Image 1: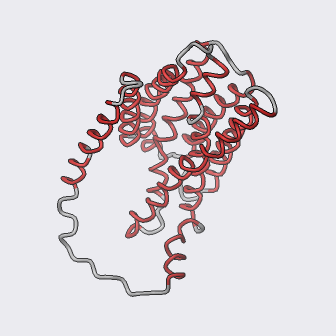
Image 2: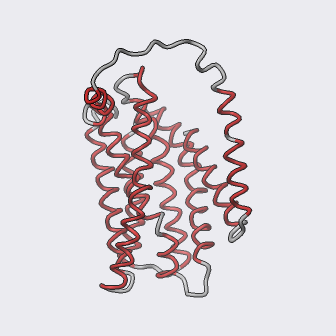
Image 3: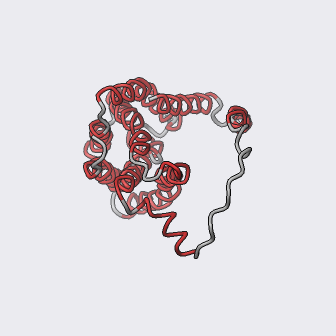
Length: 271
């Protein structure tokens, strides 16, 4: 819950700053300053790292090292946690990365500022996500349940994507109401995703490495899907029908979220 809150506060702060400094190069100075300042607590917290000498592990063949490194991805509950996070992250990515284009082409007129509208919509998402992320984590610990939060999160986010592709809504109040619904799902998911990973770690002595693999499930879709999704949207919008690309790409988000939600049931050691 605390991790979800800090993440969402950071996202909200970033959205606020970029909205205020839109089209101003000073935003990059702010980003650099924030990145530098975040080093201070990190360096302070890690000040005792490296004081105890760690013996080198015995050498072994490269293929064996790679297999051992990737073992958590194909064994046990942790593998399902990583895979479902990959799917949910993919679903979130293919919606959020093309929202500004969707709003500009489908919802708003040509003279309206789609970038600012998207910032405002995302701020609604984050503000809604904050209490659900914070209190969702507390409630999850109290009732000792994780999966139900993932189910609710996936349903809420998929619902928003379905409304976008089924109705191409133009009502501004409805769009922001959908932002609230998306924020509920976004907050609930981030309330428990790291808890799921920590609860299913296969080897506590290798937690840093395994959590690194878990983190890749978040960042990999963000690095790859915008490239293919953007090209697909442009192609379909031009050669099939106006705005058809959004319908196809957002439909893939529904599929990703469905898989990332339903397959959580395969995790046996966590309720």
